[in-house]
Amino acid sequence: MPNDMSHSSDMALVLSRVSARFNDEKKNVLALKDISFSLPKGSFVSIIGPSGAGKSTLMRVILGLMEHESGEVVRDFERPAMVFQNYALFPWLNARDNVAFGLRMSGMDRKKREHIACEKLKEVGLERLEDHYPSQLSGGQRQRVGLARALAISPDLLIMDEPFSNLDTITSESLKADLLRIWRSYGMTILMVNHLIPDAIELSDQIIVMEAHPGRVEKTLSVDLPRPRDVRGPQFFKEVDVLTEVIRKVS
Image (cartoon, rainbow, N blue to C red; front, side, top):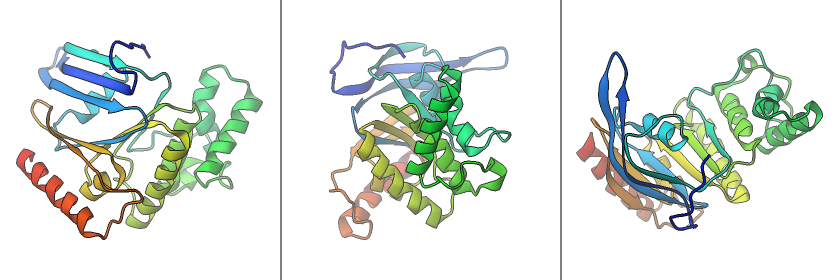
């Protein structure tokens, strides 16, 4: 990823009036309009908004997988990784080889990459399932394999695309606890696309609310609750109410 230090070195990412357009033979649609926000290094930021707000398009622009039409994107991260909503695991590879896949593509020798893969599977609680294939794993276990694969490169920016949406409540709560532990341990920046308001309040330092057609930032909210957060306390529910009202305006 390109490195540009023209902005504060405390920021992992700065977007200034970024617009992006789908432009091919079938459609010419403005997907993002004048997006501006910044990610402090080491922060946990959530993006929330209705369908059509361009959240996935924004992730592609941030990672340099899609060109933006105007504005400026300043990246100060070197090892971005992504965890996908639908896991994106290779069904013909076991958990260890799925985690090691990126390391293999980078040319790392087999012994070293398998050692790292096993370490990362242990970090997410799957050390006894390294030989299992995706079809033999539950949804929560597959998502943990996806997280371990991302951690294998020791990312400084982790992007997560609705990581809890396909999980049951018990599995989701366990994964959230592990994610917060890993975030603190790695000191990395996390940008999470989310549609669950309580999860956004529980996890985030900052929440970016997007509006749709075209995608644009409606409001940015700071979450000043102390960690670990009391998800049953009155202040938590107050924050949920505030965010709910903002979401209603853009839905």
